[in-house]
Amino acid sequence: MIVPPGAHAMPLAGPVPSPPTGRSWEELMALALEQARAGESQGEVPVGAVLAGRDGSILASAHNACLALNDPTAHAEILALRRAAGRLGTYRLGGTVLIASLEPCLMCAGALVHARVDGIVYGAADPLAGAVSSCLEAFALPFHNHAIWHMGGVAGEACAALLRDFFMKRR
Image 1 (cartoon, helix red, strand yellow):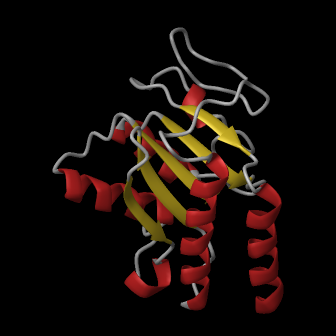
Image 2 (cartoon, helix red, strand yellow):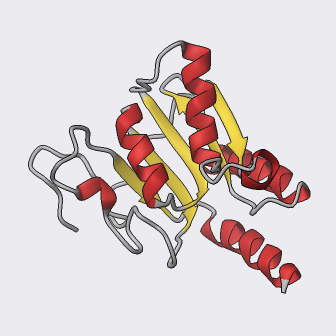
């Protein structure tokens, strides 16, 4: 992994950062999976996201809503960032961690950088469009003005199984 000087990007094999106060990564991923299942029940690709503050508070949660909103940017991560920014009255979301059931795409990775999120924890890797470590290491690009640490694989099999089952039913 290429990490620019001063960056805090963390490879998958790196040390596990502490979860927000009073929470576990597994508990937070369970909330993201609940969101993913809610999206699936509406015909959306089952991806869920939760934005947590350092104190363990849940600032926002969302699932994919591209179909419902006729919006290609309505990914779970983007919607969670929008909701938290509206709730807090600022788009700068430092001191937060996004927990997503699927590795973010390039669009979502860019939004996380611009929102100044501290870190991203995701479940399943995305070998087709993952921009954290699978297809691109977007957080390691040298021109970013904010560094984000990342960790993948939390409840990875459950997250991957949900997506696999969804697409198998569609075929």
